[in-house]
Image (cartoon, rainbow, N blue to C red; front, side):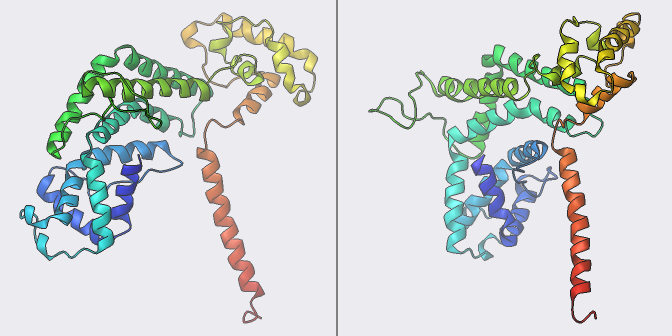
Length: 340
């Protein structure tokens, strides 16, 4: 990830370097429509997936660009390659980035990371929708967790395809298939992974730990704790309410009794709400927070105020920034002595 971001900054902070990349892309990748690589956005995961895809598509062009900066005589196919003069800072950074991109371990790590995160790209996009419902959000998360579990169950089969892609990309950039030296003295910075080949080494040291970490993070970040009042609010959805027991449900919902006018009527209303939808076929039962009786509607409103993501918060921040900028400019104008 650091190599991807450093490569983005290398071209983003210099228009001269970007123009040189623009001359390399038509020669080595005329079929691509991408002309720039994207940075790793810190707030939107969708942009991170797009950045990894753009980096993978322009991987060969980036390696050729770095090599042409260091050794222009080896690339006469690039127009006017000998006329570009580069400063010491550019050549120093180029040498380090080229070495990182030609490192076989980095190539395998990059492709494994991109493929393992691919199931999360659709989830990140869906969770940013304005009309996203909490039940649909949990269902989408469960589907992604099942996909990652499926990759873990057949990890060797999936890894065979990804490793062959790594070898193909390594041949393009003239990298050699290899693994870090394992048989050596006492190591304190990394563990010795027993393996008889580079392929087995990267399977045990990169892919399996990464997939296990993804599963653990999904379970930790999106766990459903049935003891929380918010889980009881989710159970009021008709499609869930008619398939689960309501024992102890009202006791959990009374956590919000200060927001109810007559909390003693909650039990009867929940029973009536369950009977209403028990007579309806399962496919016809609503799976969203809608059509509720007064108290249940109020509880659903409370549940809807709990954000599922930062999308709406970011919009509100941008809106307030525009207002504050307008007011600030107006106040500065009124307080100016020239205005009076």
